[in-house]
Amino acid sequence: MELPFEIINIIRNIDAEPGTLVAFAAFHPFALIVLIIPLWILKKIGLYKPVQNLNLFGFSIVVIFTVGWLLGFVSQILLMFVGVSGLKMLMIYFSMYLCISAFVIVNASGLRKKFDQDQLKRKPVNS
Figure 1 (tube, rainbow, N blue to C red):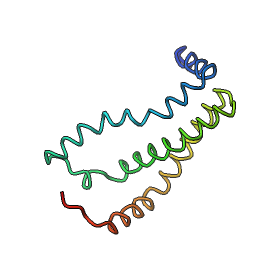
Figure 2: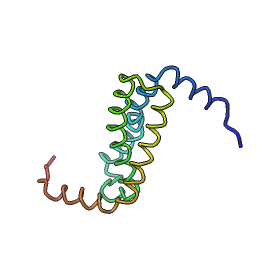
Figure 3: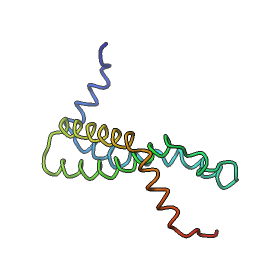
Figure 4: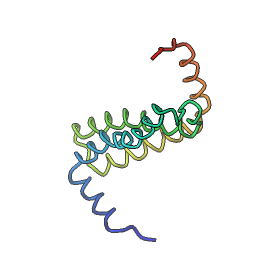
């Protein structure tokens, strides 16, 4: 099995211009907003109940993207300003996402319980 040439060109582009990786780290979660807008509309209509439908898998995905976005952007911008090569930055970015994903998958039920306890402590807001 061989890699398509487009992937190799993308890796070469990231190595030559590490700012593209920083831009990706900064803006990749905003693509999810495009997916969340229809769910928000369905919630306002009353067809979708996120508390009932967001199971452990959905919670894990949200945590992975949130933590990955925050730590990924900060780490990549710092590495770019320090002068680390783009290929090393890409390897750090992938390994960081792999570690975050493994941590969330292993500890998903405990994290969910922690966030549910925080929700119970808040007072409900009537809208």
